[in-house]
Each structure stands twice: as C-alpha cells, then as structure tokens.
Length: 331
Image (cartoon, rainbow, N blue to C red; front, side, top):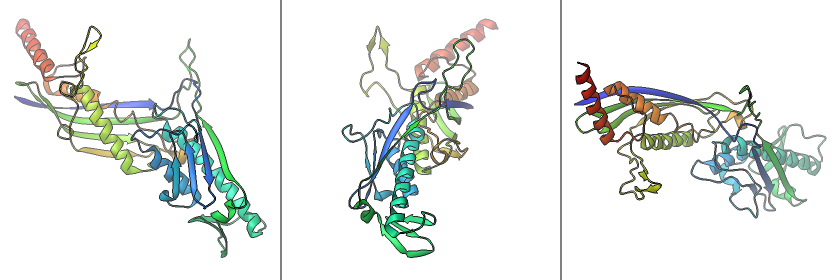
C-alpha cells in the first residue's frame, strides 16, 4: 500500500563565523593601463556563483557590464585573504569587501577625472562603458584608459562582520549578523510493502536579503534540496568499528535527477541593512530544513517517527513491523 504525507520544516541561520570570531574579507580593485577593471580577492569559487555575484556588484558600481570585469581569485600570489568558502559568508562578507573596493575605485576615478577635465567639482559626473562624463555636457568626457595612464589606479578595502561573543553564563549576545530564514514543504509517498520513499513534491521559501542573481539562487535551492534529500533518505557511510564500508558510489547512494521532484520556489527579499545591496548568503540554509521536512512528511504518511537517518527502505520495513507488533500487543 502506498501512503502519502506532508511535512514542513524551517530554519533560521546565522551566516559567517560568528560568536565574536574575526570574520574578515579583503578585496582589491584596479583599473589597468588598457582601461579594463580587475577585481582581486581570495574568495574560492566552489560552485556557489561567487565570481558571478562579485562581478555583478563591481559592474553596477563602476558603470560597466559584468563581462568587462576581470576577476582574479584563488591565487595567493595576487589576492588578499577573503576567508573560507564556508558558513554561507562569501556573498555577505566578501561581497561587502568587493563593494567597498569598487566604491573607492569609483571615487578615485571621478576625482582624477575632475582634474583631467578641469572641472570645479566631481558633482554630476557619471560612469558608463569605461567613460566618465559630465551629465549636463556629455562631450566633456574621459576614458578610464587615459586616467590610468596618469598613474596607478588601485585600491584595497576590508570588511569585518559585526559579531558579539555570547556570554557563557547567561547565553546572551549577538553571535551572528545577518540571519537568514528558510522553509520547506514536501509531500512524500511511502510504499509500506517495499519501504521505498519517494518525494513527489517540494516547495521552498528562502529569504535572500536582495536577489542579486535570481537564477543562481534557484540553482542553490535545487542543489541544497537534493543534498538534504540524500542526507535524509540515502547517504550512509556505513561506519563499522571506525571503518567506512560504503566507500564507493556503488553502495554510497546519492540522489539522481529522477529522485528529486520539481521544486516550487519563492524568493523572499528582506534586505539586510549591512549586506552588499542588501544581500545575504544562502549556501547552507537551503539544505538544512530539507531532511526534517521529509521526515515530518513520513510521519504524517505512516505515523512512525524516525530519529535516525538515512531513512532507508530497510529501516522503514523494520519500523512498520515493530509498530504492528506493538499494536497487536496493546490489543
């Protein structure tokens, strides 16, 4: 018999290292001799879209297209430290560092343009497509390349997240900033004869602060849900006396495209007052509530609560038999 159930789970997640630990990112921005823009930062790209997001931020501030930004990262001979690609911190922390560096570079450009164009002030100067011009008189303009020829155009900026160590006695403090919020709703189908569980529908509502790149956000949600599904239903290292028995993909199962349902996604924009353009990181939050929502849906379907994961077909069948025995014993 196949039984269906629904479950929800939510999470609030503090991004960054937290608890007063120094959470620092540094970035450099430069206009090279040919007028191109280079961003240097040690932030590692692990598929979360950091390079794309940082390029978008810098391009927005400097009035160019994203493909005009040359991005240098993961090279310790050229890049300043930006901390780890962990704790869902890169969009917020390193994004703020990139934003600050781009803003400082913009200020340096307009100040140099003022002198080059012999203007009274920097007021009403605009940046567009590597040019700086006077809005009221666009013919009064200068190219980034000409300004770079007058001397180095390179700035470095650092952003440090604000966190407060929690009081060990009272538990009070402000250990994280910002917090992000995520909620999943899922529907599952449990086959009581085979123990197989199929997730047939999923809904996600994710607070992102500001959606810098909605497509990347949706990709993060898809990936996070797939990881949570595998965590809850399939992935088992098979530890026995300290030895990993499931050491290859033949016996360590992960979800495929056939296991993951089409997700309905709701991107919630609740701007962070200190985030770059209001953005928050969502790398880990999109994974955390997936397994709890699935387990709640299993409970709704068959009335059995599981406290150990993954909830494999074998464990489902054993739990059903034990519940049947207890039911007979009670009657």
